[in-house]
Amino acid sequence: MPGGDPGGPASYLLAMTRIRLTKSPATLLKGVDRLLVIAPKRTLDDGGFLDVLPEPLMRFAVDLASDLQPGLGGAAAGTLTGSSPRKLAVGVLPDEVSRHNSPARAEAIRKVVAQSNTGRSGSAAILLVLDDAEHMSAAVCAVGKALPLMPVAVRKGEKAPAEPKLNVMAIGPDEAPLSPPRTLQPLLDFQRHAGRLVDTPPTDLGPAGFQREATRLLRGLPGLKRKTFVGDALLRAGLGGIHAVGRCAVEAPRMLVFTHTPTAKSKARRHIALVGKGVTYDTGGLSLKVGGSMVGMKADMGGAAAVLGAFAALVKGGAPCKVSAVICLAENAIGPAAYKPDDVIQMHSGYRVEINNTDAEGRLLLGDGVSYAARTLEADTVIDIATLTGAQGVATGKLHGALVADDEDVERAIVEAGRASGDLVHPLPYAPEFYRPEFSSKIAHMRNSVANRANAQSSCAGEFVHWHMDGTEARWAHVDMAYPAMSGGRATGYGVALLATSVRHLTR
Image (cartoon, rainbow, N blue to C red; front, side):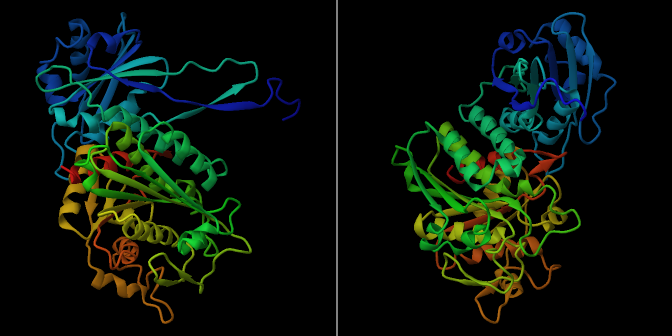
Protein backbone atom coordinates (compact mmCIF):
# COMPACT_ATOMS: atom_id res chain seq x y z
CA MET A 1 0.00 0.00 0.00
CA PRO A 2 1.21 3.59 -0.63
CA GLY A 3 3.31 4.92 2.21
CA GLY A 4 3.88 1.48 3.68
CA ASP A 5 3.04 0.39 7.21
CA PRO A 6 4.79 2.46 9.89
CA GLY A 7 4.46 -0.42 12.30
CA GLY A 8 6.56 -2.67 10.09
CA PRO A 9 5.77 -6.24 9.17
CA ALA A 10 3.83 -8.30 11.69
CA SER A 11 4.98 -11.55 13.16
CA TYR A 12 2.33 -14.11 13.94
CA LEU A 13 1.91 -15.88 17.25
CA LEU A 14 -0.43 -18.75 18.01
CA ALA A 15 -2.63 -17.67 20.89
CA MET A 16 -3.50 -20.94 22.56
CA THR A 17 -6.22 -20.89 25.16
CA ARG A 18 -4.75 -22.75 28.11
CA ILE A 19 -7.35 -25.20 29.36
CA ARG A 20 -6.96 -26.42 32.92
CA LEU A 21 -9.10 -29.20 34.39
CA THR A 22 -10.10 -28.88 38.02
CA LYS A 23 -12.41 -30.53 40.54
CA SER A 24 -12.51 -27.49 42.83
CA PRO A 25 -15.43 -25.02 42.54
CA ALA A 26 -13.25 -22.32 44.11
CA THR A 27 -10.48 -22.86 41.55
CA LEU A 28 -13.04 -22.94 38.74
CA LEU A 29 -14.22 -19.39 39.43
CA LYS A 30 -10.97 -17.84 40.65
CA GLY A 31 -10.24 -14.69 38.66
CA VAL A 32 -12.61 -15.48 35.79
CA ASP A 33 -14.73 -12.87 34.04
CA ARG A 34 -16.99 -15.28 32.11
CA LEU A 35 -18.78 -18.48 33.13
CA LEU A 36 -20.53 -20.96 30.83
CA VAL A 37 -22.80 -23.59 32.38
CA ILE A 38 -23.57 -26.54 30.06
CA ALA A 39 -26.29 -29.03 30.97
CA PRO A 40 -29.11 -31.09 29.45
CA LYS A 41 -32.45 -29.29 29.29
CA ARG A 42 -34.16 -31.46 31.92
CA THR A 43 -31.32 -30.89 34.39
CA LEU A 44 -31.59 -27.13 33.99
CA ASP A 45 -35.38 -27.33 34.35
CA ASP A 46 -35.02 -29.36 37.56
CA GLY A 47 -32.46 -26.94 38.99
CA GLY A 48 -31.10 -29.66 41.23
CA PHE A 49 -27.48 -28.51 41.09
CA LEU A 50 -27.88 -25.03 42.57
CA ASP A 51 -25.44 -25.72 45.41
CA VAL A 52 -22.43 -26.46 43.20
CA LEU A 53 -21.55 -22.78 42.68
CA PRO A 54 -22.86 -19.66 44.46
CA GLU A 55 -26.65 -20.03 44.47
CA PRO A 56 -27.52 -16.58 43.06
CA LEU A 57 -25.26 -17.29 40.07
CA MET A 58 -26.78 -20.70 39.47
CA ARG A 59 -30.34 -19.41 39.78
CA PHE A 60 -29.44 -16.79 37.18
CA ALA A 61 -28.25 -19.60 34.89
CA VAL A 62 -31.44 -21.62 35.38
CA ASP A 63 -33.56 -18.55 34.68
CA LEU A 64 -31.53 -17.75 31.56
CA ALA A 65 -32.08 -21.28 30.28
CA SER A 66 -35.81 -21.34 30.97
CA ASP A 67 -36.76 -19.84 27.61
CA LEU A 68 -34.00 -21.55 25.62
CA GLN A 69 -34.86 -24.61 23.56
CA PRO A 70 -31.98 -26.91 22.59
CA GLY A 71 -33.52 -28.35 19.44
CA LEU A 72 -31.56 -31.31 18.09
CA GLY A 73 -28.09 -29.77 18.39
CA GLY A 74 -28.02 -27.55 21.49
CA ALA A 75 -28.32 -23.80 21.98
CA ALA A 76 -26.57 -21.07 23.98
CA ALA A 77 -27.44 -17.65 25.37
CA GLY A 78 -25.61 -15.17 27.59
CA THR A 79 -26.02 -12.03 29.65
CA LEU A 80 -24.19 -9.62 31.95
CA THR A 81 -24.52 -10.44 35.65
CA GLY A 82 -23.74 -7.13 37.37
CA SER A 83 -21.39 -9.02 39.67
CA SER A 84 -18.59 -11.58 39.36
CA PRO A 85 -18.07 -13.24 37.00
CA ARG A 86 -19.15 -10.35 34.80
CA LYS A 87 -20.64 -12.49 32.02
CA LEU A 88 -22.76 -15.61 32.31
CA ALA A 89 -23.75 -17.95 29.51
CA VAL A 90 -25.71 -21.16 29.49
CA GLY A 91 -25.53 -24.00 26.99
CA VAL A 92 -28.66 -26.14 26.82
CA LEU A 93 -28.20 -29.67 25.48
CA PRO A 94 -30.92 -31.96 24.14
CA ASP A 95 -32.11 -34.53 26.67
CA GLU A 96 -31.85 -37.45 24.27
CA VAL A 97 -29.57 -38.37 21.37
CA SER A 98 -29.82 -41.05 18.70
CA ARG A 99 -28.11 -44.40 19.13
CA HIS A 100 -25.42 -43.47 16.59
CA ASN A 101 -24.45 -40.33 18.48
CA SER A 102 -22.16 -39.95 21.45
CA PRO A 103 -24.28 -40.25 24.63
CA ALA A 104 -22.15 -37.40 26.03
CA ARG A 105 -23.65 -35.10 23.34
CA ALA A 106 -20.10 -34.14 22.35
CA GLU A 107 -21.00 -32.29 19.16
CA ALA A 108 -23.71 -30.28 20.93
CA ILE A 109 -21.17 -29.29 23.61
CA ARG A 110 -18.72 -28.18 20.93
CA LYS A 111 -21.42 -26.08 19.28
CA VAL A 112 -22.57 -24.29 22.44
CA VAL A 113 -18.99 -23.50 23.47
CA ALA A 114 -18.38 -22.01 20.02
CA GLN A 115 -21.70 -20.11 20.05
CA SER A 116 -21.07 -18.63 23.49
CA ASN A 117 -17.57 -17.43 22.50
CA THR A 118 -16.30 -18.67 25.88
CA GLY A 119 -12.56 -19.20 26.25
CA ARG A 120 -11.35 -17.16 23.29
CA SER A 121 -10.10 -14.24 25.38
CA GLY A 122 -9.52 -13.25 28.96
CA SER A 123 -10.11 -15.73 31.76
CA ALA A 124 -13.18 -17.95 31.65
CA ALA A 125 -14.71 -21.06 33.19
CA ILE A 126 -16.97 -23.86 32.01
CA LEU A 127 -19.08 -26.03 34.29
CA LEU A 128 -20.12 -29.28 32.60
CA VAL A 129 -23.19 -30.85 34.19
CA LEU A 130 -23.13 -34.51 33.13
CA ASP A 131 -25.78 -37.18 33.55
CA ASP A 132 -23.09 -39.88 33.57
CA ALA A 133 -19.54 -39.63 34.92
CA GLU A 134 -18.34 -41.74 31.97
CA HIS A 135 -19.15 -38.79 29.68
CA MET A 136 -16.39 -36.60 31.08
CA SER A 137 -13.70 -37.43 28.52
CA ALA A 138 -15.90 -36.82 25.48
CA ALA A 139 -17.31 -33.63 26.98
CA VAL A 140 -13.88 -32.16 27.78
CA CYS A 141 -12.48 -33.08 24.36
CA ALA A 142 -15.52 -31.41 22.77
CA VAL A 143 -14.61 -28.20 24.61
CA GLY A 144 -11.10 -28.47 23.14
CA LYS A 145 -12.45 -28.87 19.62
CA ALA A 146 -14.29 -25.57 19.96
CA LEU A 147 -11.07 -23.72 20.82
CA PRO A 148 -8.48 -24.18 18.07
CA LEU A 149 -5.29 -22.15 18.05
CA MET A 150 -5.81 -18.66 16.69
CA PRO A 151 -3.04 -16.77 14.84
CA VAL A 152 -2.54 -13.27 16.23
CA ALA A 153 -0.53 -10.58 14.43
CA VAL A 154 1.96 -8.77 16.66
CA ARG A 155 3.86 -5.82 15.20
CA LYS A 156 7.35 -4.81 16.19
CA GLY A 157 7.31 -3.00 19.49
CA GLU A 158 3.82 -4.22 20.40
CA LYS A 159 3.18 -6.39 23.41
CA ALA A 160 1.87 -9.87 22.70
CA PRO A 161 -1.72 -10.36 23.90
CA ALA A 162 -2.28 -12.20 27.16
CA GLU A 163 -2.81 -15.92 26.85
CA PRO A 164 -6.51 -16.77 27.25
CA LYS A 165 -7.20 -19.08 30.21
CA LEU A 166 -10.08 -21.49 30.67
CA ASN A 167 -10.89 -23.56 33.75
CA VAL A 168 -13.14 -26.58 33.22
CA MET A 169 -14.93 -28.59 35.88
CA ALA A 170 -17.45 -31.40 35.51
CA ILE A 171 -20.04 -32.67 37.96
CA GLY A 172 -21.85 -35.99 37.79
CA PRO A 173 -25.49 -36.90 38.42
CA ASP A 174 -24.88 -36.80 42.18
CA GLU A 175 -23.78 -33.13 41.78
CA ALA A 176 -20.31 -33.92 43.15
CA PRO A 177 -17.27 -32.61 41.23
CA LEU A 178 -15.58 -35.29 39.13
CA SER A 179 -11.85 -35.90 39.40
CA PRO A 180 -10.21 -35.78 35.94
CA PRO A 181 -8.49 -39.10 35.19
CA ARG A 182 -4.73 -38.81 34.62
CA THR A 183 -5.26 -39.71 30.96
CA LEU A 184 -7.57 -36.78 30.21
CA GLN A 185 -5.32 -33.70 30.31
CA PRO A 186 -2.74 -35.25 27.91
CA LEU A 187 -5.57 -36.38 25.62
CA LEU A 188 -7.02 -32.87 25.52
CA ASP A 189 -3.65 -31.19 25.00
CA PHE A 190 -2.45 -33.48 22.21
CA GLN A 191 -5.82 -33.40 20.45
CA ARG A 192 -5.43 -29.64 20.21
CA HIS A 193 -1.82 -29.94 19.04
CA ALA A 194 -2.95 -32.32 16.29
CA GLY A 195 -5.50 -29.73 15.16
CA ARG A 196 -2.78 -27.09 15.17
CA LEU A 197 -0.63 -29.19 12.84
CA VAL A 198 -3.52 -29.71 10.41
CA ASP A 199 -4.23 -25.96 10.37
CA THR A 200 -0.58 -25.04 9.70
CA PRO A 201 0.03 -23.72 6.15
CA PRO A 202 1.68 -26.39 3.96
CA THR A 203 4.77 -24.28 3.20
CA ASP A 204 5.42 -24.21 6.95
CA LEU A 205 4.78 -27.91 7.51
CA GLY A 206 6.26 -30.24 4.92
CA PRO A 207 7.56 -33.72 5.76
CA ALA A 208 10.67 -32.29 7.45
CA GLY A 209 8.61 -29.77 9.41
CA PHE A 210 6.28 -32.51 10.60
CA GLN A 211 9.28 -34.52 11.77
CA ARG A 212 10.53 -31.52 13.77
CA GLU A 213 7.11 -31.11 15.38
CA ALA A 214 7.01 -34.81 16.25
CA THR A 215 10.44 -34.56 17.87
CA ARG A 216 9.32 -31.55 19.90
CA LEU A 217 5.99 -33.03 21.04
CA LEU A 218 7.55 -36.34 22.07
CA ARG A 219 10.54 -34.79 23.84
CA GLY A 220 10.90 -36.07 27.37
CA LEU A 221 8.40 -38.91 27.06
CA PRO A 222 9.79 -42.13 28.56
CA GLY A 223 10.56 -45.48 26.99
CA LEU A 224 10.62 -44.50 23.32
CA LYS A 225 12.45 -46.19 20.46
CA ARG A 226 12.71 -44.18 17.25
CA LYS A 227 13.54 -45.01 13.66
CA THR A 228 13.38 -42.76 10.61
CA PHE A 229 13.60 -43.50 6.88
CA VAL A 230 14.23 -40.44 4.69
CA GLY A 231 14.51 -40.17 0.90
CA ASP A 232 16.30 -43.07 -0.76
CA ALA A 233 16.50 -44.88 2.58
CA LEU A 234 12.83 -45.65 1.96
CA LEU A 235 13.77 -47.64 -1.14
CA ARG A 236 16.47 -49.54 0.73
CA ALA A 237 13.83 -50.51 3.29
CA GLY A 238 11.39 -51.59 0.59
CA LEU A 239 9.02 -48.66 1.15
CA GLY A 240 8.49 -47.89 -2.52
CA GLY A 241 4.99 -46.47 -2.17
CA ILE A 242 5.97 -43.64 0.17
CA HIS A 243 9.06 -42.88 -1.90
CA ALA A 244 7.15 -42.71 -5.19
CA VAL A 245 4.53 -40.28 -3.93
CA GLY A 246 6.99 -37.83 -2.41
CA ARG A 247 10.17 -38.19 -4.44
CA CYS A 248 9.81 -35.01 -6.53
CA ALA A 249 8.90 -32.62 -3.69
CA VAL A 250 11.27 -30.03 -2.23
CA GLU A 251 11.35 -31.94 1.08
CA ALA A 252 12.12 -35.64 0.89
CA PRO A 253 9.43 -38.16 1.86
CA ARG A 254 9.97 -40.09 5.06
CA MET A 255 8.52 -42.57 7.50
CA LEU A 256 8.76 -42.02 11.25
CA VAL A 257 8.48 -44.99 13.59
CA PHE A 258 8.05 -44.60 17.35
CA THR A 259 7.55 -47.49 19.76
CA HIS A 260 6.79 -47.34 23.47
CA THR A 261 7.05 -50.42 25.66
CA PRO A 262 5.59 -50.14 29.18
CA THR A 263 7.83 -51.28 32.00
CA ALA A 264 5.20 -53.69 33.35
CA LYS A 265 5.61 -57.05 31.59
CA SER A 266 1.87 -57.71 31.75
CA LYS A 267 1.24 -54.63 29.61
CA ALA A 268 3.89 -55.50 27.04
CA ARG A 269 2.19 -58.66 25.80
CA ARG A 270 -0.04 -56.83 23.34
CA HIS A 271 1.36 -54.63 20.59
CA ILE A 272 -0.93 -52.20 18.77
CA ALA A 273 0.41 -50.14 15.88
CA LEU A 274 -1.20 -46.89 14.72
CA VAL A 275 -0.46 -45.94 11.10
CA GLY A 276 -1.16 -42.43 9.78
CA LYS A 277 -1.32 -40.94 6.30
CA GLY A 278 0.72 -37.73 6.22
CA VAL A 279 0.39 -36.14 2.78
CA THR A 280 1.46 -32.66 3.81
CA TYR A 281 0.00 -31.24 0.60
CA ASP A 282 -1.87 -33.01 -2.16
CA THR A 283 -1.89 -31.45 -5.61
CA GLY A 284 -3.16 -34.74 -7.01
CA GLY A 285 0.21 -35.19 -8.71
CA LEU A 286 0.08 -35.52 -12.49
CA SER A 287 -3.60 -36.50 -12.10
CA LEU A 288 -4.00 -32.87 -11.10
CA LYS A 289 -6.84 -31.74 -8.84
CA VAL A 290 -8.85 -29.17 -10.81
CA GLY A 291 -11.91 -26.97 -10.34
CA GLY A 292 -10.85 -25.66 -6.94
CA SER A 293 -10.63 -29.12 -5.36
CA MET A 294 -6.99 -28.56 -4.40
CA VAL A 295 -7.89 -25.90 -1.85
CA GLY A 296 -7.78 -27.31 1.66
CA MET A 297 -5.40 -30.14 0.85
CA LYS A 298 -3.08 -29.05 3.67
CA ALA A 299 -5.42 -31.20 5.79
CA ASP A 300 -4.39 -34.37 3.96
CA MET A 301 -1.97 -35.11 6.80
CA GLY A 302 -4.77 -35.27 9.35
CA GLY A 303 -4.27 -39.00 9.88
CA ALA A 304 -0.58 -38.55 10.67
CA ALA A 305 -1.41 -35.74 13.11
CA ALA A 306 -4.01 -37.97 14.79
CA VAL A 307 -1.52 -40.82 15.18
CA LEU A 308 1.14 -38.52 16.61
CA GLY A 309 -1.32 -36.97 19.07
CA ALA A 310 -2.82 -40.30 20.15
CA PHE A 311 0.61 -41.89 20.60
CA ALA A 312 1.86 -38.97 22.70
CA ALA A 313 -1.33 -38.98 24.80
CA LEU A 314 -1.06 -42.73 25.40
CA VAL A 315 2.57 -42.54 26.46
CA LYS A 316 2.10 -39.52 28.72
CA GLY A 317 -1.14 -40.85 30.19
CA GLY A 318 0.18 -44.37 30.77
CA ALA A 319 -0.11 -46.72 27.81
CA PRO A 320 -1.96 -49.98 28.56
CA CYS A 321 0.24 -52.02 26.20
CA LYS A 322 3.14 -51.79 23.79
CA VAL A 323 2.18 -49.22 21.18
CA SER A 324 3.82 -48.01 17.97
CA ALA A 325 3.22 -44.99 15.75
CA VAL A 326 4.05 -45.36 12.05
CA ILE A 327 3.81 -41.96 10.37
CA CYS A 328 4.08 -41.91 6.57
CA LEU A 329 5.00 -38.45 5.22
CA ALA A 330 5.16 -37.11 1.67
CA GLU A 331 4.10 -34.13 -0.40
CA ASN A 332 2.28 -35.19 -3.56
CA ALA A 333 3.90 -32.59 -5.79
CA ILE A 334 4.47 -32.12 -9.52
CA GLY A 335 7.90 -32.06 -11.14
CA PRO A 336 10.24 -33.88 -13.52
CA ALA A 337 10.69 -36.73 -11.05
CA ALA A 338 6.97 -37.15 -10.23
CA TYR A 339 5.56 -40.65 -10.37
CA LYS A 340 3.27 -41.15 -13.34
CA PRO A 341 0.18 -43.02 -14.43
CA ASP A 342 1.38 -46.33 -15.94
CA ASP A 343 4.31 -46.59 -13.52
CA VAL A 344 4.60 -49.84 -11.57
CA ILE A 345 5.73 -49.51 -7.95
CA GLN A 346 7.20 -52.18 -5.69
CA MET A 347 5.63 -52.00 -2.23
CA HIS A 348 6.94 -53.15 1.16
CA SER A 349 4.51 -56.08 0.99
CA GLY A 350 6.25 -57.39 -2.12
CA TYR A 351 3.19 -56.59 -4.22
CA ARG A 352 3.60 -54.52 -7.39
CA VAL A 353 1.11 -51.73 -8.00
CA GLU A 354 0.28 -50.27 -11.42
CA ILE A 355 -0.52 -46.58 -11.10
CA ASN A 356 -3.70 -45.46 -12.83
CA ASN A 357 -4.34 -42.37 -10.69
CA THR A 358 -1.62 -40.36 -8.95
CA ASP A 359 -4.35 -38.71 -6.84
CA ALA A 360 -4.97 -42.06 -5.13
CA GLU A 361 -1.69 -41.59 -3.31
CA GLY A 362 -2.61 -41.94 0.35
CA ARG A 363 -3.27 -45.65 0.05
CA LEU A 364 0.28 -46.13 -1.27
CA LEU A 365 1.65 -44.55 1.91
CA LEU A 366 -0.66 -46.60 4.11
CA GLY A 367 0.03 -49.83 2.23
CA ASP A 368 3.71 -49.50 3.06
CA GLY A 369 2.93 -48.38 6.62
CA VAL A 370 0.61 -51.25 7.57
CA SER A 371 2.91 -53.81 5.97
CA TYR A 372 5.85 -52.49 7.97
CA ALA A 373 3.76 -52.47 11.16
CA ALA A 374 2.62 -56.07 10.71
CA ARG A 375 5.77 -57.61 9.21
CA THR A 376 8.69 -55.68 10.68
CA LEU A 377 7.25 -54.43 13.97
CA GLU A 378 5.17 -57.60 14.38
CA ALA A 379 2.21 -55.74 15.87
CA ASP A 380 -0.76 -57.99 16.63
CA THR A 381 -3.28 -55.23 15.80
CA VAL A 382 -2.87 -52.48 13.18
CA ILE A 383 -5.15 -49.46 12.94
CA ASP A 384 -4.61 -47.02 10.10
CA ILE A 385 -6.27 -43.63 9.80
CA ALA A 386 -6.38 -41.19 6.90
CA THR A 387 -8.20 -38.44 5.08
CA LEU A 388 -8.52 -40.96 2.28
CA THR A 389 -11.63 -40.55 0.12
CA GLY A 390 -14.23 -37.93 -0.67
CA ALA A 391 -16.65 -40.86 -0.77
CA GLN A 392 -16.34 -41.10 3.02
CA GLY A 393 -18.52 -38.01 3.39
CA VAL A 394 -21.16 -39.54 1.14
CA ALA A 395 -21.08 -42.81 3.11
CA THR A 396 -20.97 -41.62 6.72
CA GLY A 397 -21.21 -37.83 6.67
CA LYS A 398 -19.35 -34.93 8.27
CA LEU A 399 -19.09 -36.23 11.83
CA HIS A 400 -18.72 -40.03 11.58
CA GLY A 401 -15.48 -41.46 10.28
CA ALA A 402 -15.86 -44.54 8.08
CA LEU A 403 -14.59 -47.74 9.69
CA VAL A 404 -13.55 -50.92 7.88
CA ALA A 405 -12.23 -53.84 9.93
CA ASP A 406 -11.42 -57.48 9.28
CA ASP A 407 -12.28 -58.51 12.85
CA GLU A 408 -15.66 -58.12 14.51
CA ASP A 409 -14.23 -57.62 18.00
CA VAL A 410 -11.89 -54.87 16.76
CA GLU A 411 -14.76 -53.22 14.90
CA ARG A 412 -16.97 -53.28 17.99
CA ALA A 413 -14.22 -51.90 20.23
CA ILE A 414 -13.52 -48.96 17.90
CA VAL A 415 -17.22 -48.11 17.48
CA GLU A 416 -17.59 -48.11 21.27
CA ALA A 417 -14.44 -46.00 21.58
CA GLY A 418 -15.93 -43.51 19.14
CA ARG A 419 -19.09 -43.09 21.17
CA ALA A 420 -17.08 -42.85 24.40
CA SER A 421 -14.60 -40.28 23.03
CA GLY A 422 -16.93 -38.22 20.85
CA ASP A 423 -14.87 -39.04 17.72
CA LEU A 424 -17.67 -41.01 16.09
CA VAL A 425 -17.20 -43.83 13.56
CA HIS A 426 -19.62 -46.05 11.68
CA PRO A 427 -18.77 -49.43 10.13
CA LEU A 428 -18.70 -50.02 6.39
CA PRO A 429 -18.76 -53.45 4.74
CA TYR A 430 -15.62 -55.58 4.83
CA ALA A 431 -15.71 -57.91 1.81
CA PRO A 432 -12.37 -58.39 0.01
CA GLU A 433 -13.95 -60.81 -2.46
CA PHE A 434 -16.25 -58.01 -3.69
CA TYR A 435 -13.70 -55.20 -3.73
CA ARG A 436 -10.32 -56.56 -4.82
CA PRO A 437 -11.50 -57.17 -8.41
CA GLU A 438 -11.92 -53.38 -8.76
CA PHE A 439 -8.10 -53.08 -8.73
CA SER A 440 -7.38 -55.69 -11.43
CA SER A 441 -4.21 -55.10 -13.45
CA LYS A 442 -2.85 -56.93 -16.51
CA ILE A 443 0.80 -56.30 -15.59
CA ALA A 444 0.93 -56.04 -11.77
CA HIS A 445 -0.74 -57.48 -8.71
CA MET A 446 -3.14 -54.55 -8.54
CA ARG A 447 -3.87 -51.01 -9.67
CA ASN A 448 -4.12 -48.21 -7.14
CA SER A 449 -7.58 -46.89 -8.09
CA VAL A 450 -10.91 -48.61 -8.67
CA ALA A 451 -12.49 -49.37 -12.02
CA ASN A 452 -16.00 -48.54 -10.76
CA ARG A 453 -16.17 -45.51 -8.49
CA ALA A 454 -19.78 -46.33 -7.59
CA ASN A 455 -18.85 -49.62 -5.92
CA ALA A 456 -18.36 -48.91 -2.21
CA GLN A 457 -15.41 -46.65 -2.89
CA SER A 458 -14.44 -46.07 0.76
CA SER A 459 -14.50 -49.80 1.50
CA CYS A 460 -12.49 -50.46 -1.66
CA ALA A 461 -9.83 -47.95 -0.66
CA GLY A 462 -9.56 -49.54 2.76
CA GLU A 463 -9.26 -52.98 1.21
CA PHE A 464 -6.39 -51.80 -1.00
CA VAL A 465 -4.53 -50.89 2.20
CA HIS A 466 -5.44 -54.16 3.92
CA TRP A 467 -4.26 -56.19 0.90
CA HIS A 468 -0.68 -55.26 1.80
CA MET A 469 -1.01 -57.16 5.08
CA ASP A 470 -1.69 -60.47 3.32
CA GLY A 471 0.15 -63.36 4.93
CA THR A 472 0.34 -61.73 8.36
CA GLU A 473 -1.73 -62.66 11.39
CA ALA A 474 -2.33 -59.11 12.58
CA ARG A 475 -5.87 -57.87 13.02
CA TRP A 476 -6.64 -54.70 11.07
CA ALA A 477 -8.92 -51.68 11.08
CA HIS A 478 -9.03 -48.61 8.85
CA VAL A 479 -10.60 -45.22 9.64
CA ASP A 480 -11.34 -42.78 6.82
CA MET A 481 -11.64 -39.32 8.42
CA ALA A 482 -11.79 -37.11 5.33
CA TYR A 483 -14.74 -35.05 6.56
CA PRO A 484 -14.52 -35.15 10.40
CA ALA A 485 -10.97 -33.75 10.19
CA MET A 486 -12.32 -30.23 9.59
CA SER A 487 -15.24 -28.14 10.78
CA GLY A 488 -15.98 -24.59 9.66
CA GLY A 489 -12.58 -24.23 8.00
CA ARG A 490 -10.62 -25.26 11.11
CA ALA A 491 -9.12 -28.57 12.15
CA THR A 492 -10.91 -30.53 14.86
CA GLY A 493 -8.11 -32.80 16.08
CA TYR A 494 -10.36 -35.72 15.18
CA GLY A 495 -8.81 -39.13 15.65
CA VAL A 496 -6.61 -38.45 18.67
CA ALA A 497 -9.27 -39.36 21.23
CA LEU A 498 -10.64 -42.12 19.00
CA LEU A 499 -7.30 -43.90 18.62
CA ALA A 500 -6.19 -43.48 22.23
CA THR A 501 -9.55 -44.71 23.51
CA SER A 502 -9.56 -47.59 21.02
CA VAL A 503 -6.19 -48.81 22.29
CA ARG A 504 -7.51 -48.76 25.84
CA HIS A 505 -10.74 -50.56 24.86
CA LEU A 506 -8.82 -53.23 22.93
CA THR A 507 -6.69 -54.02 25.96
CA ARG A 508 -9.43 -54.11 28.62
